[in-house]
Image: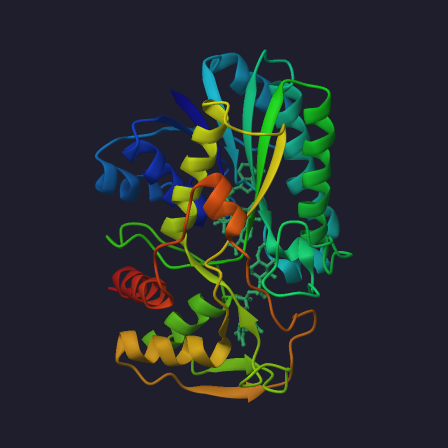
Length: 337
Ligand code: NAD
Ligand code: WQD
């Protein structure tokens, strides 16, 4: 079966391509290389021994999307990762985000709704919950006003897919990721942030390697046990496997609704200081850090209730925070050598 993976050369997409190929699917990657490199293909081939089809195209170009579906008529499913994801950049340039994250989605759905049957998986985010009232967060927690244009594109994206599914043959699964971290254990693929990393784990591994002087911990006066924020850090390989399980659910018509939503997290929250301590343990390095002011827009705590993913989807995260940080550290050392 041929599966389209948009954004398949990116961080989560590339790991998902590996899992799909390992399960025997034929993969067509669509990517415009705006936040990735064609070299990622080499890593995918090194792990799987299989060369995915790669179509370099920009999903913001409607004609290019139409041509793509005219060329590939035998597609069994689409996993849509392609999007811009930098929260701060989205505040500075909202239209870039609305154009990239929304128009690409609309063009894809326009093609898929013409098909007799379509299976669609969407990368959503725990950001839709904002600061949820209750921890751990269940899928029926209320959606909060988005704190950034990026977050808003995920909310709008979910709504667009839901509306279109009602009037078409599209069945979709919306996956709300918590905080993805880590790299493939082979260190053939991993996260490649451009410039100064905004996310905690790549900043830590770069600091551990000596590329950054010290980590700034954004606030230690939150109402948490050690005062630092709590997140649910999920290993990217676990996350990738969840996409294969979700796809199979759609392909086997096991979904109970045209739209289903699942949280993808570990169910365990870790504070920033716990992440630092765990990194020091797995790397054997002392991590220089200082406590600074809170970062605007940060929420205190977010971790997933994973019951629905465990019991309905039939997927469970297996890796620990140690595993995620060890693989991220191995990857950092590999790309700097
Ligand atoms: P990434 O930037 O590594 O991957 C995205 C890929 O999409 C890149 O390879 C990029 O070149 C490609 N792309 C972007 N715009 C495109 C376009 N118009 N046409 C074709 N290709 C395009 O990001 P990621 O971390 O792998 O995230 C994947 C998805 O998961 C995104 O939708 C993101 O919003 C979502 N998500 C990510 C996180 C996270 O923390 N990484 C958390 C929640 C949700
Ligand atoms: C994690 C924790 C920071 C960097 C973001 C997006 C979210 C989702 C995942 C896509 C927080 C602290 C961080 C640093 C620090 N992406 N931190 N020093 O903010 O939970 O979520 O990525 O959907 O939408 O907002 O992730 O990795 O940036 O931060 O102290 O240099 O680490 O305050 O508590 P976040 P993060």
